[in-house]
Amino acid sequence: MNAPTRAKRPLYAEILETLRAEIADGTHAIGGSLPSEAALCKRFNVSRFTVREALRRLQADGMVARVQGAGSRVLRDAPAGVFVQNYRSVSELTQYAEETELELLKTEDTILSAEIAARIGGTEGEVWFLMRGLRRTVEGAPLALVASFVPHHFADIAPDLARGDGPIYAGLAKASGQPIEKAEQETQALPAPYHVADALGVEQGAPALRILRRYSTSEGVLIASFNWHLSGDRYIHRTRIALDGR
Amino acid sequence: MNAPTRAKRPLYAEILETLRAEIADGTHAIGGSLPSEAALCKRFNVSRFTVREALRRLQADGMVARVQGAGSRVLRDAPAGVFVQNYRSVSELTQYAEETELELLKTEDTILSAEIAARIGGTEGEVWFLMRGLRRTVEGAPLALVASFVPHHFADIAPDLARGDGPIYAGLAKASGQPIEKAEQETQALPAPYHVADALGVEQGAPALRILRRYSTSEGVLIASFNWHLSGDRYIHRTRIALDGR
DNA sequence: AGCGATAATTTGTCCAGACAAATTTACCTT
DNA sequence: AAGGTAAATTTGTCTGGACAAATTATCGCT
Figure 1 (cartoon, chains in turn brown, red, cyan, green):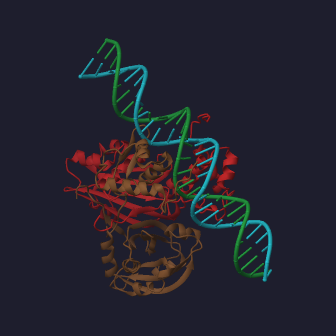
Figure 2 (cartoon, each protein chain N blue to C red):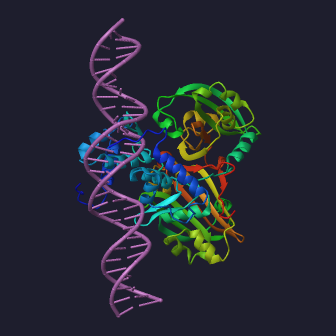
Figure 3 (tube, each protein chain N blue to C red):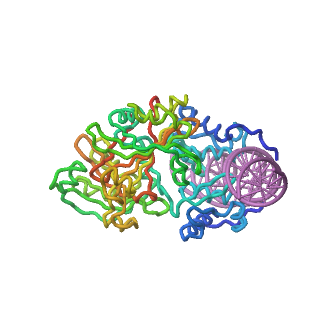
């Protein structure tokens, strides 16, 4: 078996990107079908395995549904999942950041544990830069305890960005010269560890909302911030869910 | 190439179940490594493809991290983010409802307390119809304990809608002859009360995520459902945040 | 036109093989 | 003992092939 010439990026990633673009531009309409695996193998001159790797990722994104015997149906024109809460886009998060104040508490280099690495998109054992802070409302009430991880090469500029008016990620994107391509959020209910409980004035172990926001460029994760919020009635994360056609 | 005898269930599913059990019982400790792919192929007498299908699903569950050259490291002893919820619109919530199953547990008339009324948009003292159920994944794992409040005049049809395939709110909107004009969500971290803890198999008082979704027409709230989810590592609510211009 | 059976198509499962890339281990030298 | 290099190990990417399972299309009969 002859090995293919090694592209810098996996073949399936190229195909994935092409299919994503074609779905987005309407070549493959929502509600319609993608070409069959066999047709895609022919078109891209790759094995069925490679096509399936691309399709698998489209499926994982919620963009297509694959049905045995029937083919792949387009469900969405972009990866599923958007927003929640008071914001539904990065620009609205920008406003949130501008309407609150982050008080930087501590900065340090940190070696990523396996668990943190898996969460934020780094690699276990890597050195990242960690900034801990307390985000307050304009009235001064504690809103969230924040732990932000940035790749180590931003260590020099990140603290000043944190002290500035705008969101950190915007400054980091500017410094990196790459636009933000993906912004994700994960929400969990967890027992408040001691340092969170102490900072937010709740009992250790009390239920707390941990919201992780991760911003990525094409080169990887730019910043990942854990925001710990007070439990139950002291913090409610409220959102509107979009109605279709609006 | 000789085809294997067809098992009722895929081979990778058997291996997945075995590995899950071994991680849960400590045979493969958290922080330690799983056997290599090659060793698992030997042990189970299957191809590498089959082993990798099982490992891929363990990885998707957040239970292991697979690192090229290093092997698979155990992160957790149970699936993390058993169910990742990604939705940005009502129609996508529709799909969620279709992909899970709601088992109706109990229905009853209820008089709204001030607290519940304020949350769901009713009036204290009003009689509403309450449906309690357990939402499960297609594999049967408990996903959420659900308490849905609907105005009393829907009491006759709501249970059948709950037992149907689609989302309840769609059926109610149809029955009311009014389109849904607003869909809202509120997320809180709360201690799991007894009935939630019991249904979802966690300790009473453990942190749980309570997601309230409220659907309204021009005439008022159509349905408001509290969804209680397992705490931290068992349920992660993941979203994408829209980038402006897309 | 409608229905049922069959054939064709499409995805799912699984095998064997190979090379690339990344990590770990072993070995040798200082 | 420490450091560097090479070899071994492990997962990632990719090829080709095959049969199973599910869906759709086609054909024939009434």
